Each structure stands twice: as C-alpha cells, then as structure tokens.
Length: 482
Image 1 (cartoon, rainbow, N blue to C red):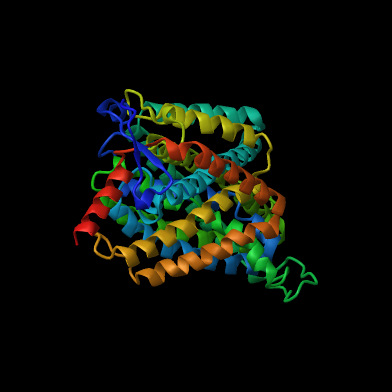
Image 2 (spheres, one colour):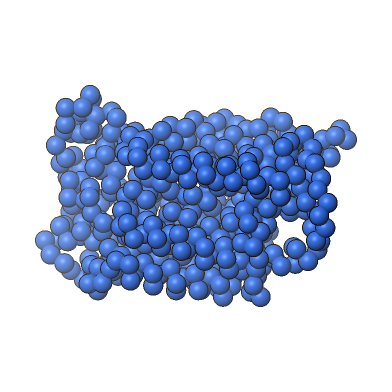
C-alpha cells in the first residue's frame, strides 16, 4: 500500500484520498451475480415483513385507527415515490454503498457519510427491535424468551451469513414465502369477524380534533407516523445488493418496485382486517398482535392462532436475517472507502465481510436486552428518515446538475416524485419527537459522535479507487470535457 495523499478536488473539499494497491481490494471482494430480480423482490419483502407481524400496532396507541390509517397512507405514498426514485439511482450507481453512493455522487464525501451512517443507525437498530418481538413470539410458543432467544438468533443467523450470500439469499426467500403464507391465513381467518365498529373502539380524548375516528386528535396522525413507517422500513435497502446482482441496471428497478407493491398490499390489509376483527383497543400495546387478534376473534387459542404464531416467527426471522445482510453491506462499503475502520470490510474465502456482520451484531444484542421494541423502532426510524431526506435530495440534485448521466431506468414524474418523498420524509423526521423525544435525542447524539469521527479522522483517510469514488471521478471528468 502506498502512502501518497492526494488533496481532494472541488467535490471532495476538506478530505484526502489515499491510493492503495490491488491487494487492498483483493481482500474486499463480494460474490458477483448471486441474485436476480426475483430474489431481490424476496429480499425487499424479507427486510420488511416482520413489520406486518408486530410493531405497527403501537401506532394505534398514538393515533387510534384513523390516525394510524392516515399516517400509513402518507408513508405508503412516501415509500412508493422513494422506490421509484431509488430505482433510477440504483440503476445509475450500482454499488454496495446504496444510499451512501448516491449521496456521495451528489454532495461529496460528507454527504455520503451522513447518508451512509444514517442508514447504518437504521439497520443496526432494527434487528434489535425485531429480536425483542421474536422473544415475545417464542415466549408465547415455547415459554422461553429474553436474552437467551436474542443471543441464539444473532449467533445462528450471523453464522449462516458467514457461509455465503447466495445460500443466505435463497434461504431468506423461502422463509419470506412461508411468512407471506401465514399472513394470508391470518387475513382469511379474521375476515368473518370484521366489523367497522371494532376499528373505532378507542375512546376519544380531549385533544383538538378528537373523534371516534381520530381519538387522539389531529396530532395523533403525526405521532403514528413512526409506526406506519414500520410497515415499509428497510425496503430501500435493496440497492445494497447491487454488487452481488446479475444485472443491476435491469434487476434493481424490478426488485425495488415489485417488493414495494407486495408490501403495500399487505400493510393495508393487515391494518384493516386485524383491528377490524379484534378491536383497535385490544391490539394497541400487544407484542404479538396477529396471534392475539385471532384469539380474541375466536374466543380461544385455535389451530389457526397456533399456525400464525409458529409461522409468524418466520416473518420476524426473515426481516431479522435480511437486515443483518443489509447492515453488513453498508458497513462494508463505508469501511472499504475509509469512512469506517478498514478492517471491517475484509472478506473471507466465501467473499463475506465477517467483522461487518459480527460487530453490529454485538451492539444489536446489547440493545435488545432493553426489551423496549417500541422505543428501538423510534431510533431505527430516526436513522431511516434522515437517510430518506438525503437520498431524495440526491436524486433531485443529480437530475438538476447532471441531466446527461446515463439512466437505464428513469423515475416516473422525475423530481416531482422525489420531491413528494422528500417533503414527507421531512415530516417523518419530526414525528419521532412527538412520541418520545428522549429516545430520538439519544439517536441524535449517536449520529453526532459518528459525524465527529468523520470530521476529526476518517475524512483524512479515505480510499481512492472504490466504485463510488470511481463513478464520481468519471462523471466529473465527462462533465469537464463538455
């Protein structure tokens, strides 16, 4: 490795790039052509499907059914617009950095780091929240929960990832298909018990605008947004698989948009049929809402509730398993580029970044010991919404400043579409403060520590020649020649 330091150009002002030899990248290789668009749809659904099983129902306690319904519609619109925008970006810049790579191209190293670390907060915290819900399901099924379950799941599924990405993606797809089947069984089982009155059984408060539809008033819509996001959180992680995809220019748009349409259908059906069969009041604080809904609807535990409980565990596992994949690829890309310690991006003989899997797993396990799944959701949502603002701003910026860049897929509606997503993401950033400002302030502090690391250390030790840097250098050279 050479030690020559190159002062950055105008797009990397204040940073220094170090040239490394070929051996550096030889030890940081991912497996190519491991996934096609069908597996990418499965990956996108796997990221999120646990949100249908648990977590969304806490929004009923914040906004009632009406507030949660309106919040879900707004967030569905935001995610749909965002997926169309990310489909364009991921076809242009198909690297393992995902959102970090998009923002790096639009705003330089600082913008890339801010986006990448916001995504990292989301993906490192979300598995901890899901582990808490897995513990609740295991407690219901087997009478065993808590730290033993959390630790077991982290060890087993990180271990599977270490064996190789192709095997992991195929197993995720199978688990996700089984989880989707259980959701269909739940919906069919609850449908005969549906009643509109069950949706509005939370007593209205004295808040402005309060009614049976909005029992907590207008502010309840805003407060329910973080839990509406849980229906879709992490689908934007599909581009993190770009370097392991057969044809990213074709497969990324198909994978993103296909996954989003599946998730949209499940979210609206679960939100309508679940509380409509069991009552919003009964589900608003449940750690296992689908099973509890079936038990209430039928008056006792049945084969159906047992089936959904058992197979529902597969839904939680699918998201837990897949988001571990996502955080490892985000860390891999940031580490390979020098934004995080470089040792985190070294891959094993199976071309898997082992430390990028293990280190966040240890942190996530420690956080899962709090048992506060609802509060961990808020932290994950904070990181997510910050990244959404930056990614949508990246789409708009690249459309305006670099309209000449090759775009294998173009977002319908262009910057109007990404502008809608940007506006709604700004609203979502603030929403977390309405639920528990202390938790979000804690997330802000973590984010600030990461920014300080960039300001005082990593910006002086960035690596030249990474895919994100190469894309930026080539596009800037082309712009100079025109």
